[in-house]
Amino acid sequence: MGWLPNYNMSEDDNKKEETATIIDFTVVKLQRLIDSYEDAGLYEQADEVYTALSKYQAGDLQIKWQKGMPFVVVDAEGRAKKPTDEDV
Image (tube, rainbow, N blue to C red; front, side, top):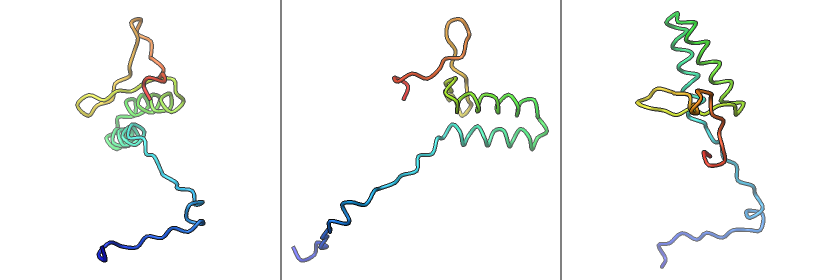
């Protein structure tokens, strides 16, 4: 068993908090889409995506992805659905 590394953890090691950064793919992808629309001079489309991004970040709508494109999830009446605990 001499080939196994010796990992001795001190009491201080156990008290350290682990941190993690979670990156929301939807936010990153929508921002890139906004940038690409602006670069192409498609400002109306950029504004629409920006509005969707703002509402998504505020928790006012859900966004689903199909074939690399974002879609706002709507209910039977055509209103944007808010995320629920089941969607997390």
